[in-house]
Image (cartoon, rainbow over all chains, first blue to last red; front, side, top):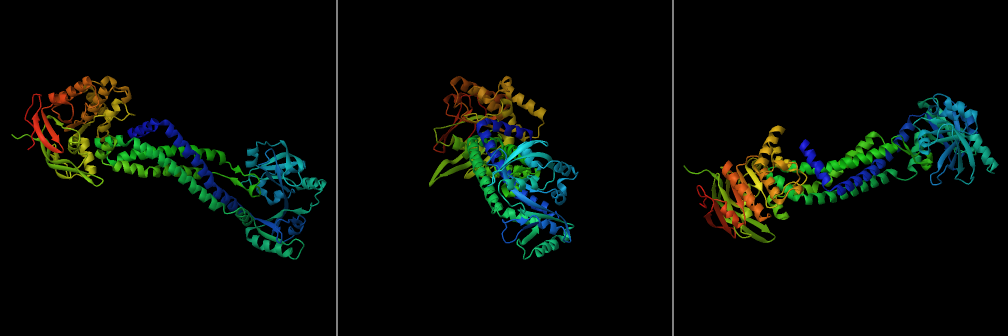
Length: 386
Length: 241
C-alpha cells in the first residue's frame, strides 16, 4: 500500500505542469460545483427556518407592489391570536459599490416584538431607542462590508429618492433568519422621504404579524383578510415560509438552472480530466506492459492508475471545496437579490459531497483509457511502443 | 537420465491478424531447452524471434501447440494465472531496459519482490544481492536517467534475477548498447548462467553473442531453420525435437 502510494506520488510529479493544471481545473470546477449545490439548499434553509416561525406576511391583495397602510397594524394587534405587528418599508440603497445594492428595511421598535430572536438580550432595543439613526445589521452583511458595531455609515438611495442617510450601527442580528438584513428606524426614513417630496409615510411595503401560537396561523391569516375585506387596501395574508417560497420562485426556476449548470460543470471537468488521463496513460503504455510482464495483475496496475486519478481529484476537490466552504460557511450575502433574503451557506456536508464528486469524476474520467491499457496484452503493448 | 527441460515448445504456431491479413509469426516450431542452458535465438527481422520469446515468457499465447516452462504447461493458463506464474518463474530483460523512470535503481529491482510475501528487510537484502551481482550496488539510489545505457541494462538484469526465476528471457539485451557495454552485458549473462545455473534464453541480432551462448536456434520466416552449437563450452545441446 505504502509502495503504491509512493509510486502514485512519484508518477504525479513526473509531468508536474500537467498535474498542477489538472488539479487546478478540478479545484475551480469543485468550487463552482460546491457553490451551485449550496444554492437550492440555502433556499430550502430560508424557507424551512421560516416554517418554524409564527409569522404572517400581509400584502396588498389587488396590487402586490402597491403596499399596505402601516396603520393597519393597530387594528391587527386587536385581533384575537395576534401577538405583534410591524410595518416594513423597504429601501434599496448603496454603500460603496453601486453594483451591489443593500436591501434596507425600515421598521418601528415593535419589529423586535415580531422578531424576538433578533434581540434575545434586549441590547438592540435599548440601543435602537437611544438614537433615531440606529441600525441593526445581519451578521453576514456586517462581515461582508467589514462594519463594526458603533460605526457611522452613509447609505445612498438607489431608488428615485436618491436620499443620502447617515446611520450608526448599534447591533448585530445573530439570528439565522435574514442574515443579510439591514434594519433602520421607519420614522427616520419616512421623514427623510417626506422632506424629499415623497408623501407616502403611511404606506408600508408589507406588514409582518406574529401569532400567539402555530395553531392560530391560518385562522389569524383568514381573520386579517376578512377584517380588511372591501377596504381601500384589501389584504392577502400568508405564512412567512409561503411568502419566502413565493419570493424565491419569482426569480425563475433556480433549481433547474442550478442542476443544468452543475451537469455542465461536471461534464466539462470530466472531459478535461479524461483528456489528461488519456495522455498520461498513453505515455505509460510501456510501463504498464512492463509491470504486467513482471507479474502485476491487471487489477493492481489499474489500481495504481486509478489511484493517481483519485489523488488528482482529491487534491483539486480539497482545494475547491475548502475554498468554497471557507468563503461561504458563515453565509455569503447576495445583496438586495431576493429582497435581501438571498444568502448562500456552504455546509461541511455540501463541501464533502462536492469533494466526493470531484474524486468520483476524476476516477470515472480514467475508466476508458485505463481499461484500454490494462486490457492490452503485454506483448501487444510492447509491439505498440517499439 | 533425460534432461529436464526449462523450455519445451511443441509444434507451436502463432498467427497474428492485422486488418484482413494473417501473419504467421511462428510456424510449427518445436524447441527444447534443458535447464541451466544459455541459448540464443537468432534470425533476421520478422523471423519470429520475439514472438517465440514472448511465448516462452508467458506474455503471449500460441495459436496452436503447447508451451511448457520449468516443467509446467502454461498454454491453458488464464491471464491472472499467467501473471502470477510470470512473477515466480520469469525474469525479463529488454532491449530498451524498460526501467520505471520515477523509481531508483533499488526500487526498480525491488518491484518484482512487491509481489512476494517477503518482508522489507528481506527484500532489501535480495535487492542488494542482485545489484551486487551486476556490480551496481553503489548506484542503487540513482534514477535511470542518472545511469548510462549499460548500467541501466545491468539494473534491468538485476530486476530480472532478483526473484530467482526459473528462466531469464532477454530480448536484444545488447541492441541499444555500444560494443564495450554489449560485451559487458553478455559476460554478465554468461556469469549468471554459469555461477547460478540460470537458464537464459536470449534473442539477439548480435553476432558476438554466438561466442557466449551454448546453442543457437535460427529462425527464418517463422520457421526453425537450424539449431547450432554456440562457441561457448556447452553441456547437453538444446534440440529442436
